[in-house]
Length: 366
Ligand SMILES: Cc1cc2nc3c(=O)[nH]c(=O)nc-3n(C[C@H](O)[C@H](O)[C@H](O)COP(=O)(O)OP(=O)(O)OC[C@H]3O[C@@H](n4cnc5c(N)ncnc54)[C@H](O)[C@@H]3O)c2cc1C
Image (cartoon, rainbow, N blue to C red):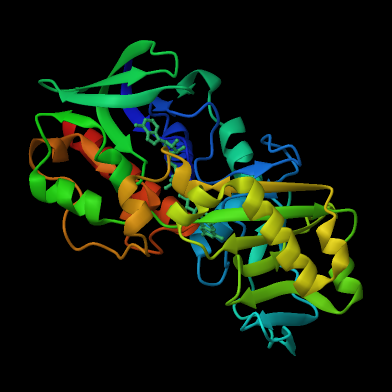
C-alpha cells in the first residue's frame, strides 16, 4: 500500500493530524496498534466497553482559558462541554487514626471542563470525519526502513499477520518511549533515542478507579465528591457523574504500579470501596458497578521505564529527530509538544506542528 503520509498512532494527536491532512486534501493512512482509536482517551460503559456516553478511564478535563487549542477543537467539532462538579465541601483525610475533615474549597480557578459523553466523544467526532479506508486498526508498526525517497513501514496485527505500507512522509503520533520500541533502519541517532527514553509518558504510571451509583448521594450531604487522602488507597477523588446524570466517583490510587500489580484489582477494589464509604457515607459501599484501568500495565501506553521513572515531560530544546530521518519523519505525540506537553492540548499542538513540517517538505518538493 502506498500513501503520501503514514500516521503511526490513533490517539488524539494522530487523529487530529489526520483531520488536518484530510482538510488539506493530502492522502494519508493512519495505523493504530489497538483495536480501538483514542489511545489514552478511553470512555466506557459500566461493563468497561467503549461507549458513546461513557465514564472516563483516561483524561476527564481540559482548561479552556489555559488551553485555547483544545477549546477551539471542541468548538470546531461541535462537542458539548460541562463544568466539573465542585459544589459543596471537600474531604481531607490525613491519618488513619484521625476522622476525615470537611472544608469548603475556594472557587476552582481555572475551571476544569469535561466533555459531554466523555472525552471519547472528541475521538468519535474526529474519526467520523475521516475517510474510513484511511484508518487501519490492529496495525502495530514494528519497523521503519528508509528507502531512497520513501519509508517502508512494517506492521503486525495481534494474530501475527504482517503488512507493509510505503509512505513519502511519516508522522509518529506515539509517546517517545513507545517510539523507541520500533526498529529503525538506518538506526536512529543514539542521542535521539536517549531523548525519547528520557521523556516520561504523562500519566502512564497511574491508574483510575471508578464506582458507579444509582444517584450522587454525596451531594445530599453537601459534599462535592472531591477528597484528598494521605491514607489511601485512593489519593485524589472527584465526582465523575456524566452530563446525562449517571452518578459516579473516580479516584487515582496513590499506590505505585508494582504494588498495585501485587495487590491485584479485586483487593484494590474492595479497599477503594471501604475508603469511599469512610469518606462519603455507607452508600458508597454498594455501587452498581466498578471500573479499574491500570495504565502502567498497558504496553501500548506504558513501558518498564514509566513504572520507575514517571513524572511530567518538559518541552525539549533538543531535536526529536536528526540525520537522514529528519527529511521524512516528524513526531506528534503530546509529549513532544512545546506547549502543554503530556496534555490533550499538547497532542493538538504537536499534531499541528508535525503536519506543518510535512506540508513544508511537500511544498519544497513540488
Ligand atoms: C489516567 C489519565 C488521566 C489523564 N488526564 C488528563 C486530563 O484530565 N487532561 C489532559 O489534558 N490530559 C490528561 N491525560 C493525558 C492525555 O490523555 C494525553 O495527553 C493524550 O491523550 C495523548 O494523546 P496522544 O495521541 O499524544 O497519545 P496516546 O493517546 O498515547 O496515543 C498513542 C496511540 O499510538 C498507538 N500506538 C503505540 N505504539 C504504536 C505502534 N508501534 N504502531 C501503531 N500504533 C501505536 C497507541 O495504541 C495509542 O492509541 C491523562 C492521561 C491518563 C492516562
